[in-house]
Image 1 (cartoon, rainbow, N blue to C red):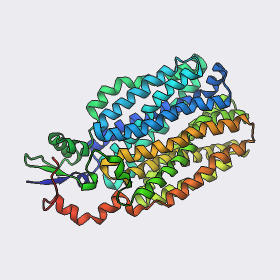
Image 2 (cartoon, rainbow, N blue to C red):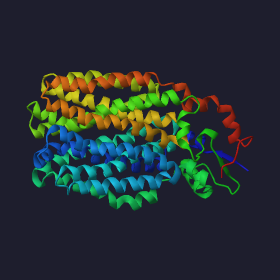
Image 3 (tube, rainbow, N blue to C red):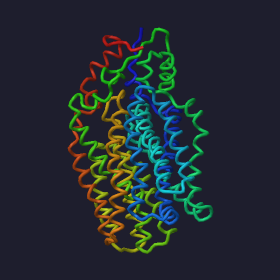
Image 4 (cartoon, rainbow, N blue to C red):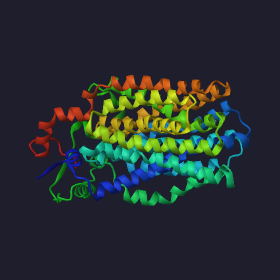
Length: 458
């Protein structure tokens, strides 16, 4: 009888077609998610004009989706460890596709906000699940690169929203960009068919045959045998109370630091995504030029995410992430001052790399920090708590915009959280992460994989 350590199998696998399939689906889902998230910021000036709302009320309208995202990240991240990630992802795609499209039918701020709140449940819920999925199936040597590459789809979605917004809003009105968000519905059957289920979930449910198929796809050299039994380290086994594991093995302090770091980063991300267009328009740029800034912001985010992931696989991810927060503080502060347009484009690109890109690398770090069985829960709670920063940002910056303050004061308000986030990341106790604890337990795990000791799981 052979005992197969699933975690070791995933860590040691070489990138192949199966990994490419997981990357494709996770990235595509994040593209849709990024579009749905960005579309309000793109259409906000037109919505404000059409519905006759001021900047403060517009901030509350934007935050309705973010409030939904807070609940969605916590609830769907936790429930996925119980019903399986595949179904959780499909439910989330259905929620944000249907209700973002429905928001296009709204004629008043209250109805619009209600539709966006429900859509937010799906937008927020899908993120921890696809990050956990990609982290679980990625080879260890390129894990951060693959996760950040996948999550750069968020920036692609934002760019698509900006490109479509420039044409559709002028020709068909702001509603058109919301109706386009309903298209992902047709892909839900394919998602359920093509996206693999979480391995600890299958192990907990005793679905050994499915595990054998996944194992043979992870490692084409593995040939399933009838007597094969699968194991994972004790800390990676799914159980009925995943939340408590966020505070086990000395992870409690670092869990709180992740929450603070996420709060600060998501404050910056949603301050920019909600108000960059309006701030640039108020600074004298045309709507078309302001939307071009959104394109540059998201292009920078994509470069920052991929570069950050590449660096994180070669250097210590914690210090790479802290450096990205520092870059955000500098670039955002400088954005508030008048300068030549080419320099302004460079700064906006750096701001995208160090805010949206930083959040993507933070997602990757969190996914690596927690054990496999509670990755979605750990990331879901970090994103959920962090969403309070995302909720506060559009409201607070909306109030500042309404006060007609100088441009640089608005950007300083967005930059201050970067410094706090950097400190929180530096205080994370990396030696308590799942990867560090696995390294300490390496000899024991090797014995388990060899069938010398351990508890069979399926």
